[in-house]
Image (cartoon, rainbow over all chains, first blue to last red; front, side, top):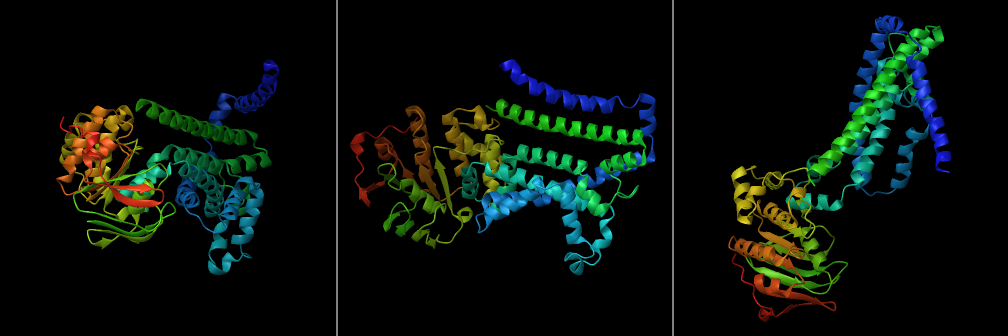
Length: 262
Length: 217
């Protein structure tokens, strides 16, 4: 019975490692080196890292206070708001992109308030908006769970010591759940780096303008430059792997720290 | 002087009592009678009606972080990512005082745990944590100390040490409210005793016959 239960696990592992290895061994070393020297690839790397870092920063600025508010404050309609905040996590990114385009584009209600905004959409600004949207949802959810997990007596203690709620957030709550916030940040960054659907709708697939790594894969598959597409895919896998290692290191560091002070 | 007038919470109603400056008042009574709620109301941690005054100033409407009291209970909530000295430093900062190492060490010395200044809370024993928490509460020189059975989980030797420490605090004009189930603790520390009993709150005689423990070390 136990061995039978391993069968689906083996199948899943085979698919994961099989697809990964297929990508890795698709290019021989000279081709890979040649691909890595292409300016288009360099542009895609820089744009991806730049926009994803900025999106992460914005997601932290939105998600941490937002998560704190959802964890600490009670107000009417909180249940509905909680559900609405989950929508970006369950909606297909392409649909998110269409929604954002209709909201922020020429015909959208925001254009009358910020007339210059629609003109910025099909540019790196559009990439950042799309990435921030998806990354913020992850960050907000992680932060809310992290703050909710704190024993409220720590907060009462901080207040009793004379710390205001804002200082309590910075000096007590964030240090108490930094590992969860960092984990949420790593996931948000990974999501921003891999963002494709919403970016396609909001920023378009414009070579050497809005060409992030996922967009470069799409554009080069479409134009038949398979080697460059695979090179970009390998770089995305490398970045995802690095983020995965960081995430695991953070979790281990937290466990080690806790066991060291026991 | 602490004056409580017509204080009502979910646990009790129309409670009146006062405690003079520099005194130790014991609050006793059965579990669930409202002892902890009374301290929480004074600390601003639960909603109440009525009036609480300290040193002539009404505390009604004053948020918890601006009240002139420090609260200590069995669960200490020392901040686990800070050393013992770090916890004291944060308490100094929270009270608007400079982070003075010498003041931290003097307070830890008074508690007999100066050698643990650089240890994390989980590296020290329960009794040492208790002393560290008391040091953190006292390092900002509060005028009102709320103690909610803080010593009940400790052995008698450590308790006697901490009773001596608490008695010393009173020389610094610190007003203490002590919630306890232990008659010996009342006899050793309190000047007056107020008891919750069947919905009533009244001053009761301290039973000195319980035997005042020698509080000197």
